[in-house]
Length: 145
Image (tube, rainbow, N blue to C red; front, top):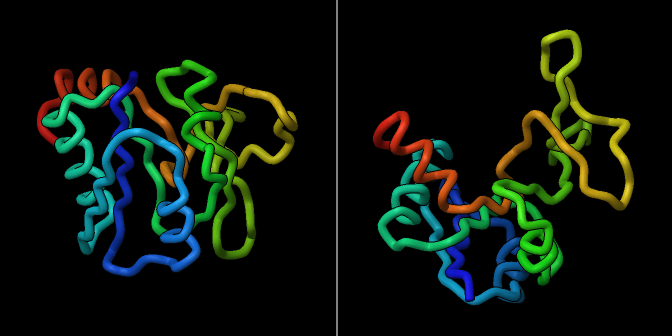
């Protein structure tokens, strides 16, 4: 069975609906909620915690989104190094947090296929499952977080 760390960065506040989702999440593992003034510092801490705890996967979830209780099961079924759930920005324009390369620039992926897995060039970390081996490879190549 895979060891999973759910990592949730926050700047000190959490949406109550996101907390309810976290409480219903179906997975076998641990939760790492890290509060920092800068979200990227919290993400770095979660990444280092994942390396130290020798988990197989990190499920990145933002503290202000809602998701299905079985999101980890659904994403693991794809068996990819990184796979994201589809979610949208919380402020207008409410665009998906997925991006494609057009004319050598990233643009919001608006015309994505429905109900199927597809490749993106970039995605937000608000709902992303990542194999810990990806974090380890980045850490080995670029050093500490």
